Image (cartoon, protein in one colour):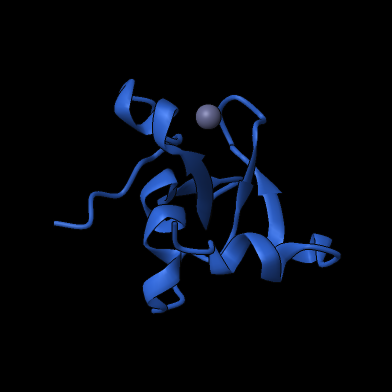
Length: 79
Ligand SMILES: [Zn+2]
């Protein structure tokens, strides 16, 4: 059973936590860190780019909301 690196690193480090922009569920923020132990984390966190108050903004989104089709206002497709 592999140890989940992000889970232990995030402990006592609340700045690494954020909430889903759609449902408010606490989610990890380590989306951009390339670390083998973070594979699980990356799969449950999406940084969707949209617009808030006419500013381009990254909306942290949990996998459940992403899979359900939730997208931020003014969603910008990465394609
Ligand atoms: Zn969510």
